Image 1 (cartoon, protein in one colour):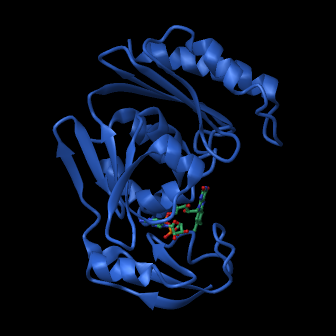
Image 2 (cartoon, rainbow, N blue to C red):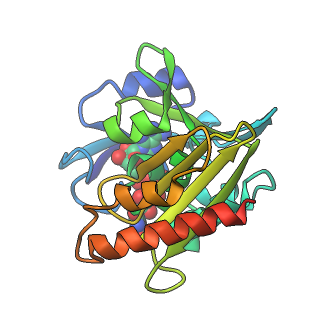
Length: 253
Ligand SMILES: Cc1cc2nc3c(=O)[nH]c(=O)nc-3n(C[C@H](O)[C@H](O)[C@H](O)COP(=O)(O)OP(=O)(O)OC[C@H]3O[C@@H](n4cnc5c(N)ncnc54)[C@H](O)[C@@H]3O)c2cc1C
C-alpha cells in the first residue's frame, strides 16, 4: 500500500529520496499501486518516488542505437517509427492497450518474469540498462546480468541496437494471450546471433549467443529441457522452441 508520495523535480532529489527505507521508484504504477504489498520487496507500506517530472520519457536515436527513457510508456515505444517490428510484436503481447498507455519500460522490465515478451526481445537484442545510484554514479548493465541479478538503483534508460535484424515468434492460447513459448532472435552484420526463449520461469532464457546461426534449433531445444509447468510440458516447449527459432531465422533471411 502506498502511504507516502513524492514527486521530485530533479534527479538528485529523486536519488536522495530513494535512499530512505521502503521507498520505491514509481513508474506507471500499474503494478505498484495495485497490491497491498509490493510484489518485489514484500514491503507492506511503501513510499513512492514518482519519476514523471524528471524528463526520463524521451526516445532518442543515436547513430545505430535507440535510447529509450525509463518512463517512456510501452505504447509510446510501440508507436515510434524507430521501434523495430519484432519489438512491436513483443510489446503488443506484453500487456493490453490500457496498461501499455500507462506502464513504463523500466517498471515493466524490473517487474518482468519469464513470460515477459518485452524482456525476451530486449535480451535477444543485448540491450544495455543505465542505472543511477544515490551517489549519482551512472553505470551500465547488460540485460542478461540485469534480469538475473535485479540490481538496486534507479533505471534511467534502456538502449537497444538498431543495426540488427530481429524476429519474434510465439505460440499462445489465443492471439492476445502471453505466449506459452516465444523465441526472440537478433542477428548482427558480423553474423553474431542471439536467441532467447520466453514463456516460462522467472526470466527469459538466453539459448544461444554465437558468432553465426549454426545449431540454433538444437540450442533452443536444449535450453527448454526442464521448462515444465502448469501451462505446458518440457517436451512440448522443446519442440515448439525449436520450430519457432527455425521460423525466426527464416524470417530474417
Ligand atoms: C489490470 C492489470 C493487468 C496486468 N496484467 C499483467 C500481465 O498480464 N502480465 C504482467 O506481467 N503484468 C501485468 N500487470 C502488471 C503491470 O502492468 C506490469 O508489470 C507493468 O508493466 C509495470 O510497469 P509500471 O511502469 O506500471 O511499473 P510500476 O508499477 O510503477 O513499478 C513496478 C516495479 O518496478 C519498479 N520501478 C519502476 N520504475 C523503475 C525505475 N525507473 N527504476 C527502478 N525500478 C523501477 C517499482 O519500484 C516497482 O517495484 C498488470 C497490471 C494491471 C493493473
